[in-house]
Amino acid sequence: MKLSPILTTMLISTLNGTFTRAFTRQISHYRAISTQTLLQSSTAAEAPTEETTQQVKTAPPKRILSGVQPTGTIHLGNYLGAIRQWVELQRNSDNEKDESLFCVVDLHAITQPQDPKELGESTLMSAAIYLAAGIDPKKSKVFVQSHVPAHSELGWLLTCVTPMNWLERMIQYKDKADKIAKNGDNSSGVGVGLFTYPVLMAADILLYGATHVPVGEDQRQHLELCRDLVRRFNDKYCKGNAYKKRCKKAGMPTYPVFREPEAMIQKVEGTARVMSLTDGTNKMSKSDANDYSRINVLDDPAVIRDKIKKAKTDAFVGLEWDNAERPEATNLLNIYLAVQPPKEEGGLSKEEIADQVKDMSWGDFKPILAEAVVAHLEPIQKTYKEIRENDTYLNDVLKDGADAANEIALSKVKAARFAMGFAQPSS
Ligand code: AMP
Ligand code: TRP
Image 1 (cartoon, helix red, strand yellow):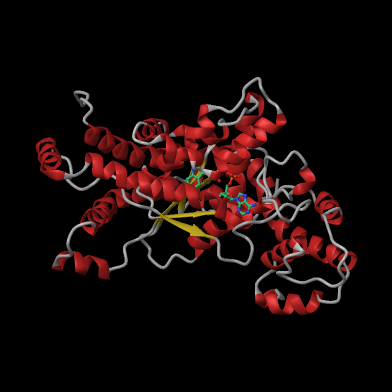
Image 2 (tube, protein in one colour):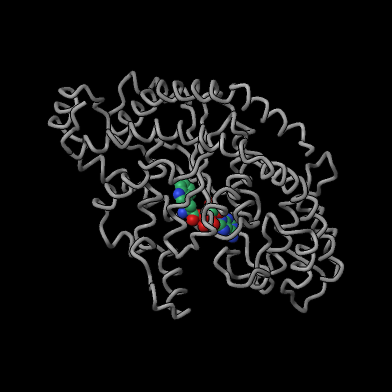
């Protein structure tokens, strides 16, 4: 087996233990900055003092967290809307104290029926795609959500402080529930988990005190709910002298348990919401029964060419952006723009593309688009194969990720339990 230089370096560092050292360093770093950042969030609500004004001046490090569900396979929407943004954030970090965690959210996947024979494999596949797309486990932690039990526990604690009507407003829940009802699947119906899912997502974020959450546009409402939950929890459980006294007595910090995260929605044209190949007014989605509606990151080049060839078109001549009557044209052009190589390697800007395609027929444009997508995905697919040929490497990355995540998450869930007043287990 021939490994790429990147993978070889990653493997060597795993084998000789630099990984473990890096993670140990990162964990202690987490501990050091968590006090600092939480202090900032606690003072934010109070009248500014000289000390707080000073703190605002130094830009606090970012703590980035995101995840994708391991249902079906990861498609171009997930990649362009979320994962590529994670990689860019990792690359462009301007503060060496920035921290990132990326999890495969398998507990979210089971909000809809999953085949037990496939869930584990889809989980490993997703983690390997994160790495193949450029997530570097020496810089970011990659882990599986179900390997960190605190997600389920905090999910439950937060479920008990969430009003029903907050969840009833969630668009994604309504859409998914409608789809299930339309498919007439009465055997299982709409699961309670599908309804409470945004609370589990809030737990994922709050466990790590994430400051920034890079996601596609469809997750904006869930992020708002998460912020509402922070305010509700902190107001209910972390305010007043009684709380402070209790904290002091128990030797716990007196600041509020949770901090409000910020959504980071992809800014590259059209990629916050990549649309279906078969209907330019619908989001590209894993749950669409028609595989021809999406391009999967691991699709063979021949399949990608065929899917693009069969993608929905219109009767207009020439291609253009932003004609309300031509959602498919806008979507395919957005994809074409998003998969351009860097400018130095011949990549085109939006204006150059608009000029290139203005007189083209769909028949001229589609093969050009297909080749651009194939060329963009090819190195990711190659690295993916190499990673999957080496289970030890992937397992080590996920173990290191889960160890680091467990340590951070457990201390947060303990703080939440304490604030809510649970009896503390004797040590
Ligand atoms: P999911 O497949 O629902 O787990 O989504 C994982 C991530 O991909 C989330 O950040 C979503 O917002 C993002 N995402 C999913 N579908 C799309 C799409 N069609 N366009 C852009 N981003 C998407
Ligand atoms: N709900 C997200 C989606 O379906 C996935 C997700 C779960 C997530 N937990 C998260 C994304 C935490 C960001 C942060 O797309």
